[in-house]
Image (cartoon, rainbow, N blue to C red; front, side):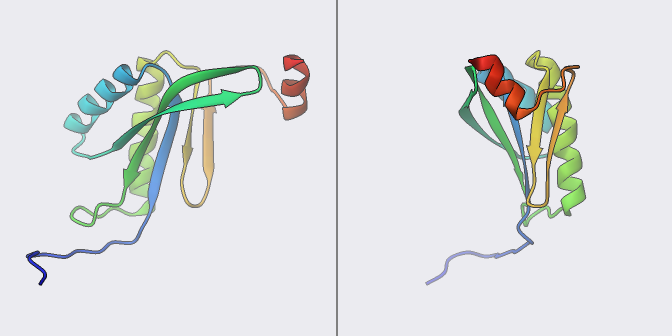
Length: 123
């Protein structure tokens, strides 16, 4: 027998921030940001393994929470705002946000790397 008093549904959507940096700094930044901007995020520690190196970091995910539903743009805008704050607090040059529709990358780097240049530089 179902003991729940409420059941809510919202369209499934998300925005995931991918950023390198110390997990403790990432989590603390998320705590402060969520307190100032009532939100809930999932923080998962991860490893970024790429041509020429490896870094630790996190995936910070916003989900469409049925109790407080948002549309795709609102979720993306929140992720973008938190992403820029994370970039500063972790002293990173870049971060990425993935949504069901598109992936966005912001970088302070001036280099214009192509995948063939990255492979060549790692050899």
